[in-house]
Image 1 (tube, one colour):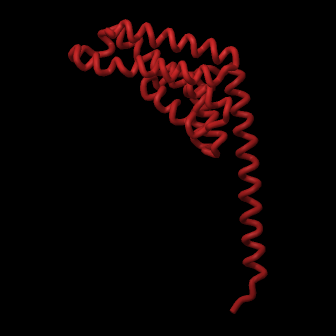
Image 2 (cartoon, rainbow, N blue to C red; image 1 turned 90 degrees about the vertical axis):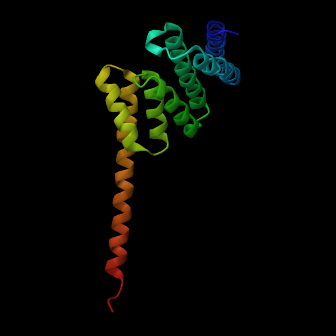
Image 3 (tube, rainbow, N blue to C red; image 1 turned 180 degrees about the horizontal axis):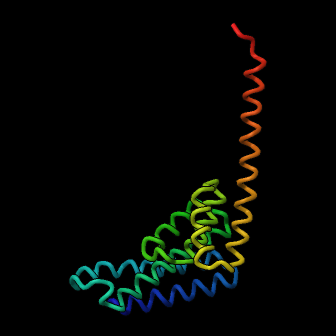
Length: 174
């Protein structure tokens, strides 16, 4: 199978994954996205054999890169439904390695960071997204959730220190 045929098959499988996801068939979507990646990632060996043309010079290679990033991001979307946050982070990192400005992958990794307690990383990603699109309602919701989680963490931290200092003041001196 040549490069363009593998790309075409990868796109077909990704499209089938999108339809399954839209129908809330998460298992079917995951299967299709994984199969699409097998075709798209299988193009690496063909690309190496073809020579040293860069991705910028070859629109087919660029399309493969974009489709691969989309599949990784879509896998992350599926796993958000199951709240499998560490895998969401893994897939988003793979998508962002190919397309650092992928808005959906950046948003999904921010969601995962927030839900795994990585407040600073979530805040960094969400602020970048808010800067690029200040009107994005989903980003605003996540920023509000971030603010709430940060407030809760601050209250917990204050309680811990208060209890620690109270215990220290009650201990007899030697």
